[in-house]
Amino acid sequence: MTIKKDIRALTKDQLRDFFVQQGDQAFRGNQVYEWLWSKSAHKFEDMTNLSLETRALLEDNFVINHIRVDVMQRSSDGTIKNAVRLHDDLIVESVLIPTSKRTTACVSSQVGCSLDCKFCATARLKRMRNLNPDEIYDQVVAIDNESRLYFNRPLSNIVFMGMGEPLMNYNNVLKAIDKITSDEGLAMSPKRITVSTSGVPKMIKKMADDGVKFKLAVSLHSAIDEVRTSIMPFNATFPLKDLREALEYWYLKTRDRITYEYVVWEGINDTKKDVEALIQFCKFAPSKVNLIEYNPIDDGDFKQASSKAIDMYIAMLEANRITVTVRRSRGKDIDAACGQLANKA
Image 1 (cartoon, rainbow, N blue to C red):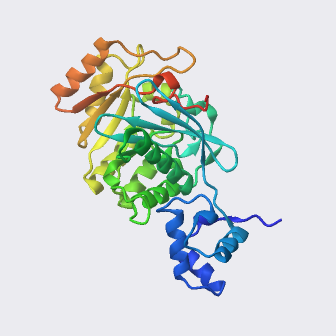
Image 2 (image 1 turned 90 degrees about the horizontal axis):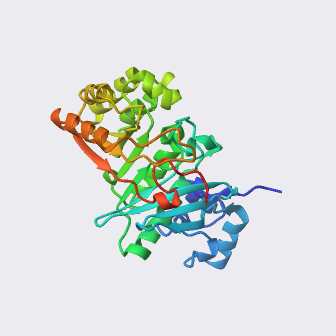
Image 3 (image 1 turned 135 degrees about the vertical axis):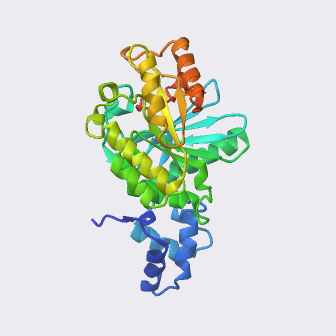
């Protein structure tokens, strides 16, 4: 039995060539491409401006491996979490985060995760596979539809902060963003997209060289190597010195400010010494610090720091003219907050 190719793996030119080879006209490929991306068609039979013969031809040769929202949960604060079933029955999760002014999609890039952060539920799943560009794109389309349905407005922002390390699936993430930002896709501005990484120096430099237009966020959590390695073991392979060099390179190339995502835990990184190290790390390139409320996973190894410790961070960072914000977590009651995505739905 011949395995049919996923049609969304084809470029527009390849689709045009397919129709020419079938004795049809090249523009038919443009029509199909529009159905697949701009209109997010999930079935060939939905492509109503194509003849029945053309739709049958597509059915004979291709499949559309679209995602399906298996379970949708709504939080008391309005947050929506989707358990997304992929064509091979694996599950990832994505989240819609509404505020009064914007709707943000938090999307996944891998099934499980390539890295080993001890405070994150997703890391316990280990990486099963990378998501394809269309699977990432579909998550965004699903959340855009939910935003329009439940909040009466289109999706405004996208963050790659769901399951997985985006830079370990670099090519597919970039292809998905190309489709999301293309006029032939969702036509979103790249400035409304943030890719969050735990810090893969070589890939941060590659992003800079590739001239990407989206924003960069780094899950830092400590600017002291020993501390960071204790909570993010891969830091032993990608130490802060290498990360700092890559981020300096990023800023030199892009002139874009870096955001540091930072959770403060009791007894781990809640001292003055920790803040001083963070301040020094922030000074080599324009940056801002996002202090994130910790969301417990099943065990109690990590505990949210006291409000006194958070206040110390804010005061010391502001005294050094470093922009700092505190991000309160959304969707905790449905395990949709940062670090909680683990397919428990």
